[in-house]
Length: 104
Figure 1 (cartoon, rainbow, N blue to C red):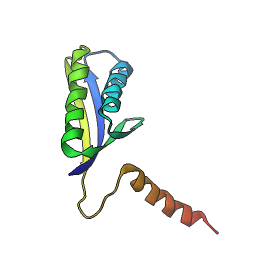
Figure 2: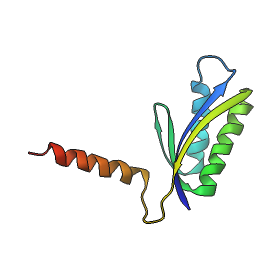
Figure 3: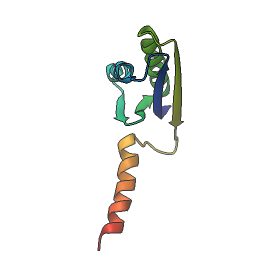
């Protein structure tokens, strides 16, 4: 089953700046070969269910290895079985609707 997740990993007990931990998690995601899009408050990742969940686990492992004693993560996920739809398709469908509304 294919899944699209929105993942936000927040290390706790490491101080105010968490950008090194976020960068490390991004490296894990990139190394997975899965499609992803980082945004201001997390990262969308898409692919086969087991591969995506394994990446979530590896992100936690990597951030703990960096010294974070605690991590809190938010994970939103969506699946569909009626047709194939990726992250770019979802965005394009809304952009097309917005574009058609602004046309004279």
